[in-house]
Image 1 (tube, rainbow, N blue to C red):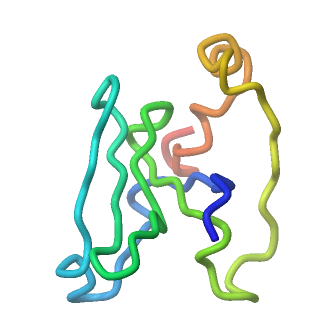
Image 2 (cartoon, one colour):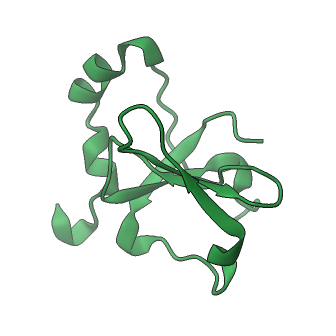
Length: 101
């Protein structure tokens, strides 16, 4: 379901349904900067706080109901060269609201 395809939104634009946090747990590893939020029942990471955009939320595309979003841009990259990709990708801007740009 996850396939690590996600889109990033400003944290201020992300809202969970009331009471849903009861079903979630957070896991960190490596640099401990990213916060991976898992469902306690099924184990899927439907969203997380990425180290690339700590002011945003990365939402897993496969966990979104059809018709919820109009478009999501897909950018492929070599995860082994993450630091080089991040510096030149412009991805840090994805978590900025229009007011912050």
